[in-house]
Image 1 (cartoon, rainbow, N blue to C red):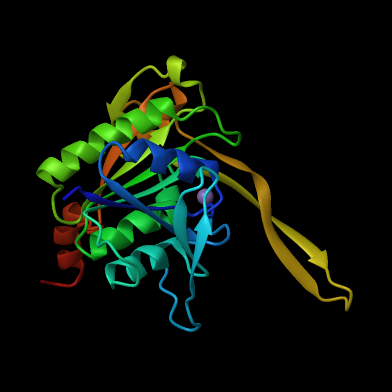
Image 2: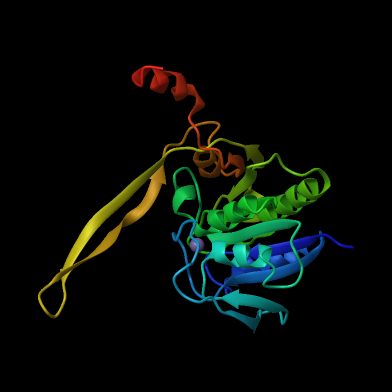
Length: 253
Ligand code: MN
């Protein structure tokens, strides 16, 4: 039986990045697409518990069928692992996101949340993003994802670990290579935008320029800034082990 691969994203089921990922992974296994019916970018890891979730069927731009839901990316994966659609996945791949998910972005990212929900359910996963506001071609990054998918299906990943892949905003033939990285430092440039509604009450937007980051060797941001595809192994274990002893001293233990 071919490997079962579930594809989701946070940009919504009509995203070209989702279709590119689905078409690339068809050489690895049997692919099922289950993605949100709207854009959930920056929705983070969520579980919808206060409204009903609906599952619909749609046709992708290449004529193939897909499942969609009114829930978040993590709901798509959660619903699939609970058996709401056929084909229990052996691997979940989330993306390709329009925009990088680097450094602290991973805590906001719906793309990464889709991969995290898979890990919670005991299924290995990959999050994939292209650090570009305009789509360029996907061949370089999908080539890396296919290699990673084959390796994971053959050998698995450590428990609690998943992979976060980010591609630079250049054509595939200009990508310099692939680097294994750690999380880097994002620099957010959010500004508070205050406006007034027709009743004279203030309302707010979080505005400002897109984030930048610190270009540092060994990091995801540094790799992508220098034209490499970054692959970061992320752990769901966020414990700061180095700080535990000091913390114990504070508490007198
Ligand atoms: Mn997105």
